[in-house]
Image (cartoon, rainbow, N blue to C red; front, top):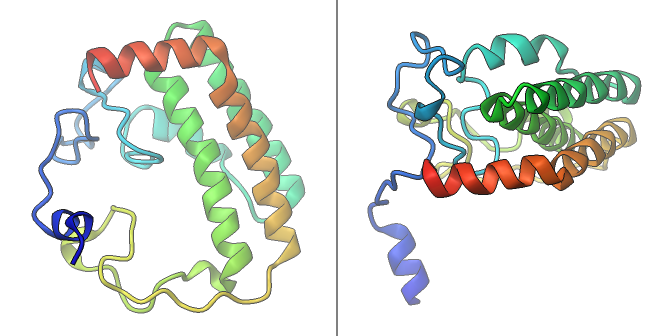
Length: 178
């Protein structure tokens, strides 16, 4: 066993920079308490952080390229609006929805019905990404409609990540708060 394998199989030490899944997001308004927000990795918290989830989720669609285009443009416009308001948490949540549009559309492009892993998510892992010990199901022939929807979301996600104002705010936020 390599050192990397040994270390990765041990208990994971939670960093104060990780997304905090222990907060009671149903009761929190992170527009009012933004200092509680942690960027985390990838899409962590995208379906938890209010009021942003409630504001962005109704616009999130990826079933067809037309829906993905409309959705990604609306969410990107929200991203820019959050930036204009000086709301980094909102901008980061919009970025996460763009990223999730890409990853979910890719999942459906590769796996009919979107089911990537065999078996249910373990009870203690619900709401968290990953295989959690489950086997990945074989990929199927790519669905070109979902692949195009993914490409559309990826372009907007890349545009958000490349936004200089967002990049500076994200760097500062992560240095200060995580």
